[in-house]
Image (cartoon, rainbow, N blue to C red; front, side, top):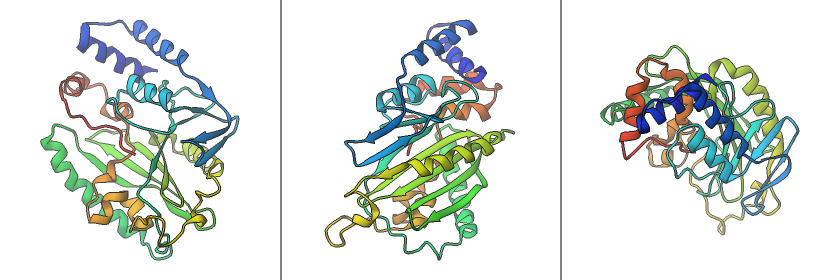
Length: 295
């Protein structure tokens, strides 16, 4: 709870003066009471996909997910999601808590014909170079650098289920603590389900274990599955699996602007550290154009 309390304390101090830590705790508790968790079969976006949420997880709908992202984690308003998955044993508002944010990319059918040809070591090198290039712009905009340290979990694709997953080890600035960005992509007839989790690297073992469970209970429904694609009728994305890992839609134009996708503003706090927290939030609240969560 320490980092969330610090976040709320700094936020309200900037907005209206000093605030006690116990007041911040009360605000966290009040927000938690507003959340409506669900389990069992959950339909996404009118039923084009569904989750068979087991007892080890809980689902939050889009409105509640927005509350966590904005009020709990400090992201700017406007992030559109299909909801959020939370491990049943933790709250997304606790320091050790984490969640899987669900979105949908309707860019079209993504071919998996390159599945056997991708050299993920070479791809990682390309991504690292692109990330460092992107840091030049981040510095001009007043944001700290983000470094792609390496794979926390190398990409793996299941051709039978059409599910792809990987994890990245990220470092913000010179912080000693690294951030884990764990990604799942489920390929469908007209697009891709995007599931992103952000946690500390020290949570890799538990997050990896739980994300393997998520892989098993998220599916497109009949008529929307990968095998339902109709060539010449349905839209094709025009790129393959390597582009999904490297940055999705931007990769097909040769740009890798999506490399930092899935990094949530609050979770950055874990690696920003206490020093400089005041200036970080001063910038956060003063800037009109922030760096939002991007699926």
